[in-house]
View 1 (cartoon, rainbow, N blue to C red):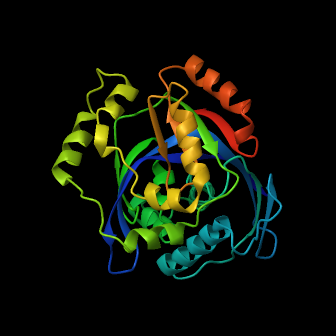
View 2 (view 1 turned 135 degrees about the vertical axis):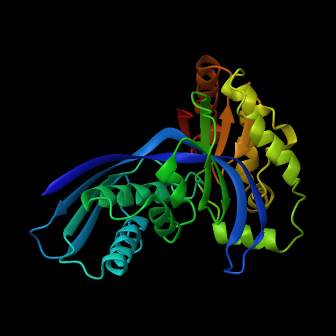
Length: 305
């Protein structure tokens, strides 16, 4: 048996713009994705001597379906691509995954996608790196739109379906407080609502200038990021707010805690706030933790990495 331990970090969409619908039916996006230190952990055991099989145990959730989990999909796609690339595989081993969940589901923080990317990275290493970076990236986007980002991590500009990724200067070490309402938002319904209305204006030249300005490392990460001002919007926020009042309540509460920036991530329902210091963030955490309105919400103290 070969055993691998790997961490799968969550992400935030620092801003998210929807550019339109592609011929394949997927949406073209333009977003800065940021890795944070809230993370799941996986133990992946590979048994070459056993008959082909798969099992996943989840600590922290008891409703996981092994056949529908993105980890299973990542495993299946990996061996399908490997078979096409090499013509045949002597034997697919028995794979066992023990997944400890910390990233909440239906939050817009990419927990399932991050777990899937972790599986791909382990299999890529175990089988001697059979795929180029470009091939692994294409494999990943066929598992899920957010999966390619997690092969990179850090701070990235993500375009297209999610496969066109550019590393950006790090925005690490920004203190965060995240509120995850007890209810989630349906991502397909959110995009359907976007499709029913004209898309908001997108100034490509201004965004290009802003992305270039992030290279100015003389400024602190938070100040460099906030220079984007009115560009830092999430096009999915308006339909999500219409579907779930809890998101607006979380935004309002976080705005009143001394946060420098408050935004929903992905299609929600998690809302994050950025702070000048950990002290201010920690006071905000205590304030919301003791507020009865948020007793059913999950609160997370984190930072960008």
